[in-house]
Length: 68
Image (cartoon, rainbow, N blue to C red; front, side):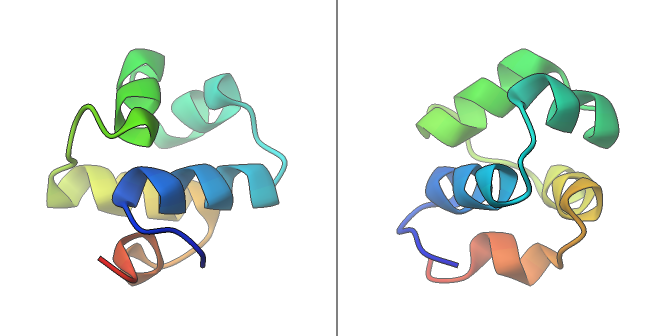
């Protein structure tokens, strides 16, 4: 997965799957503002958040942190 930051990896995975911020938020059970902050690099996720997002995206947590 391309990207040099967690936010880049998250955005790429979300777009690749055709999900909006709102759809990912609902699927992962994470506040939409948090999704925006993570993608913008304004916030770094904790492990449970990484796993929730990965599960919602149908990928492994290591895919989201690849290249970091």
